[in-house]
View 1 (cartoon, rainbow, N blue to C red):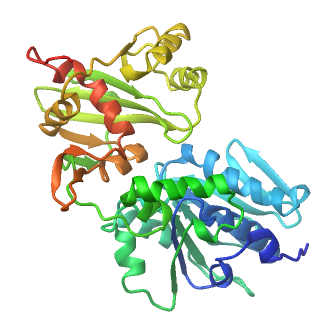
View 2 (view 1 turned 45 degrees about the vertical axis):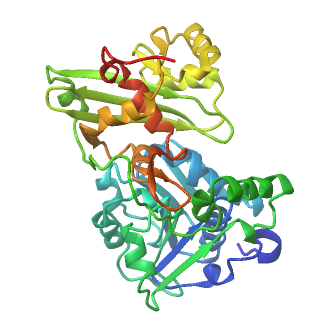
Length: 413
C-alpha cells in the first residue's frame, strides 16, 4: 500500500528535519503540546507502511504506562491517516500488525528487561525503536541495553534508528550530555515547543501565557522546552533501587503508609504507597497512582483495582467533600490529614531524616522528588518554602507519614 502524506495538512510545521532524518539517534526534547509524541506516532505508522520489512519496538520505563500514552497515540495516528482497515490492533498483550505484510509494532517496559532483549520478528527486521518519556530512564546503562537490541543487518532501503522523546526537566540528566552537548552526524538533537503547534486554540495558548507570568521556572521547561535547572532540592536522601515488596513487608518493624492528594483538570490525583521502617530510618516507595481528570468515582475504582481499598489512606483535608464521597464508595479507612501551622516544613523535616528507597516503577515519584526544590526570593536566594510544583506525590507522602511526624508538640491553627 502507498499513501501520500502532506506534512502541512497532517503533521504541520516544525518537524521537517525530524521527519526526514535517517541517522541512528533522533532525540526530541519538547514542551507540553509541542506535537512531539503525535508527530512521532504519525511518522511510525506512515513509515511502517512505506518501508516493507520495518518493525518497531516502543518502550517506556514501565509497561503499564504504555497503553494510555504511546499505544493510544499510535491508534490516533492510524485514524488520522485513514488507514485503520490495514491495521490489526490487540490490547492483550499490546501489539499492532500491518496486515498486508505482517510487520509489527511491539510494546515493552523496562520493568521486564528480558522481554526487551528477546524480541524476534517473523517478517523483516527490528530496526526502529521509540522511547517515550525517555527522561524516566535514569540509568544510562538501561538505554545501552536498548541500543544493543537494535542490531543486525537491514536490507534494501531500511535503516536502524532509535527515537527519544521527552520533557527536559533536569539539565543533569545523562541524555543532555550524551546527545545534546556534543552531537555528531549520527544524532539529531532538537527542541520544540507549543508555538509550532498550529492546532492549539486561544484557550490552550492562554494556559502557557498564564504559566509564563505565574511560574516562569516551569514555563522555561513546560512552555519553551528548555532544560530544567535543578538547584536546592528539598530531598536529597533518596535512591532508585529495585526491591521485593513482599520481602520488605516481612520486616517486623515495617508499617504501611498511604497518602492521597487530589487533582482534576490541571493537576493529577496522586496516591503515595509506601512502607516505613522507623528504627532503620528507611521509607520504601513501592507504588503510585498519578492521573489527571479522575472523578471521585474513578479515584475509588482505581485505588480498589490497585488492591488498596482496605488500607488506611490519609488525604488532603482541603477536599473534605471528596473524602466523604470516597468513604461512601468503599474506601472505609480514608481520613483527612490534620495539617496545621507549619505542617509542610514539619513533614519535610521529618522525612529528611530518613533514607527514601524508590522502586523503579514509581516513575512519577522519581520525577517529582528529583525536581522538588526550595523557592527563591527576588535576589535568587533560597528560602525555607518549597515550590508549588512537582509536589503532588510529595504532599501525598507527607499526608501518609503524618501519624509519625506530628508528635505531641504539634500545634494547630
